[in-house]
Length: 351
Image 1 (cartoon, rainbow, N blue to C red):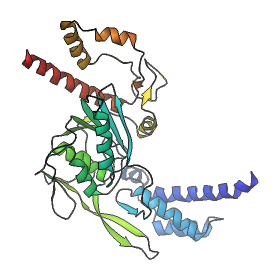
Image 2: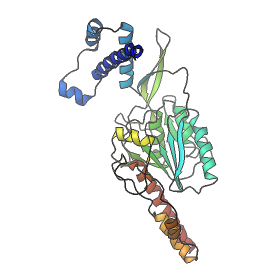
Image 3: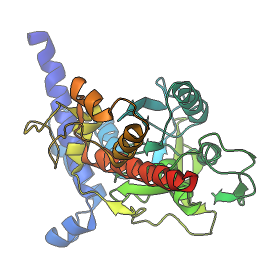
Image 4: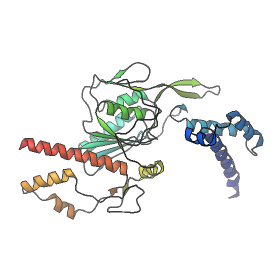
């Protein structure tokens, strides 16, 4: 245990210094309560000369980390190694016919990953809608954002402009021709905000959740004296209609108020036990599987054609895990309700 003690104390000092530096970058509400923040250089020098057991290099590292964390989405050191994990975090089917695509980041690999997963699932499922979950999704590759949008948007449509002129969709036939709901929150950053904005502006999707970060900026890359590449957001990104992603973030079409810490928990485990549960970390109880409007329409048709009742099948089947994530649950309800309305209208036309 003694061998780990120096490392523990070292990390403790770095955390303390980083916290102090982040405090210097606090938001307007905090500054209004305490007055103008102290001068950064003065605090830095005070820490450098008075904080015991920390080198100037460690102090500088903590200051840079705190500053870039506070400006996340507006400034970042370029990752020369590149990502080691998939851009698509998950692709699952819930409630039998709604696909859920959880995105980790917007980059050049995402379009191919999403296309492959969608086609594989669509071969064995009659999908009624897609939930594109962009909560906690990051990235500043706006070319990848435009490319991803082409899965949903036909050609001859302006998508966005990040400083080099308008970019149009070039694909003639869409790959994913389904109703789409996009989930966002205040950790939806940069290119992820742009994807949500494009799909809404093109009339493809509704946006659910909470306002995005408002940090969609085209970046200028600078080389630092140590050789690192610093990317600084300088130009706001514009959508196809000429509107900019506002600094206050994209406002959702439907707000579902959920705390950020709670969303982090639910992102790891969005499902709870079947039936009502008070242990599910959500603003609304986990729900048992209940008949949707689509189920009711299908059951009526089965009764008319003397087919086995869907209700009887439900009684025999075990309960499935409920959706504990209230934002995801709301999106699934919307898509299944829309599918039921379309199915009902189609049935009336055929009659």
